[in-house]
Image (tube, rainbow, N blue to C red):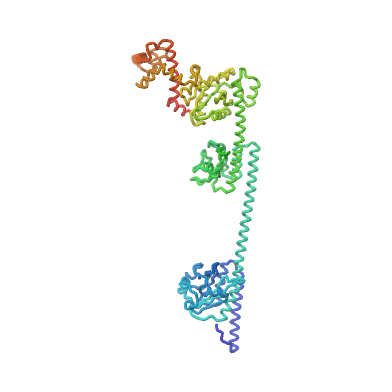
Length: 607
């Protein structure tokens, strides 16, 4: 293209035809830009049409960044990867032809970019120009209002000037391109705003659904409380609304209720590992863990101050939602209220049971009809009660032992309470020995420590007398240093009459005065003189039966008895001394049996 004056009609026609083609191409390009919506598509289309329109070796478009620098966003006709790599080919603010255009707001060109001295050059950008072979460069601004948002460049790989017609043509196209690019940006912003609005609306919808579901669960949980439901109803309700499986643990960690509608969820007999219940107890918030099988376990605890009342465990195949966790926490609070209510009711019932027990133990036979009616109202038939149990633990307070006896009274249909500082139970048992073993094993397991249990059969409403005997026997067991044993009063009753449980020193002196020398000799020589003498008394002094019971030869027995005589004196067979020695030996045997490891192992096995 040139600006040579048109001198004849042929050249004039040619010039007009060329201008017409350029204008038609310009308008066609402008129309095609209006049909595009995406910013990246518009950028690519602008550069492609500019390259075709102006006819240079290549064209590219740079956008102005917030710091005033220029970054190439689209190219057409380039031959090097570095120059066409978007966001890497950039020019600092004020540098190159672009810097001049931004400063003046007008088109600018150079015939030889690298050889133009009055331009501010950037070494990094110049290192891209040389491999690309860029020499001549024309740039026109893209305006939105009065702001330059970008620059459209046309470049040749040979040195040359740019004609006025070329500058005007590219500027006109740039004006259309700026409008199209701005429209695309507005379209993108509008679409982004619409997407954000849709997302916000969806969030509102989800929140509304969550609130509605939470309200529904809250109403259902409230209904459970008002209708007297328990842990099982709460678990079923959670499974209905949240899915998965729900396990309820009591304050001791035992499973009190379970619910699941999917066979995939195995109902745990113990808490999973890692344990979310313990984590929830420590943090005071809902805790979630995953097991090796990929199941998600979320736990929330029921607390009353510092008192742990129980926990709820939600098991799902996928990660629980925030709503799931909040619902689980709310259900745990409801569970805590139910437990407190049940505890209050149980405490009230236990107080009534304890009051009835005290009245029975203090009443004068026969039991009055009013007292029988009150017991009958609690489901207890006084006429059927035949066994009294007294229990105490060296490691647990009486109130805790009483609480465990109350649980037994509910199971076995009796009355429990604390009377004169003793944990006491009245029940229908029949077999006193079996009852002593069962109660001892149960209390030992529940308390997790040693416990003394004494059982006295009762008859003819003589409950006050039965309590006195059982209480004295229990005191004697403590005096004998027997901490973990269950027995009937038959073993201790006679000796309990002789010795006050509060006078342990007198008992020790009695044993020392009566058989102390025998016990010392046995301990020093590892003999069995005390056991030999006990067997001798048990068989009424019959030497043959005594030797047979001890599995020793008659001569051995006689030698042992001679040694007994040398230790106790010649008069140990006199009636007075023999009675004292027999009592002392029996008390020593009871003490040894109560302390023996074998007896403890047998009791542990019975638990």
